[in-house]
Length: 67
Image (cartoon, rainbow, N blue to C red; front, side, top):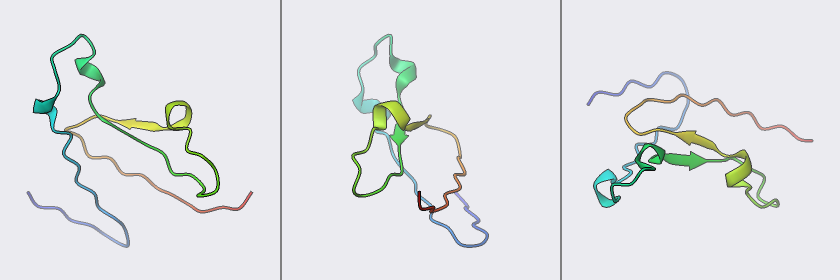
């Protein structure tokens, strides 16, 4: 698999170990959920996290800002 990165960035390749999951009606829910947050605040992953499905490429842009 060839990967080309332009500019600065971080590349993550995650293996969701799909074979380790049982076949259920929720099989379409397989994936990764992530959230960037301030280190002094708890992560509200369920409410604010973003979901990613396996088998796709995603590009995410992050900017640090002070509120």
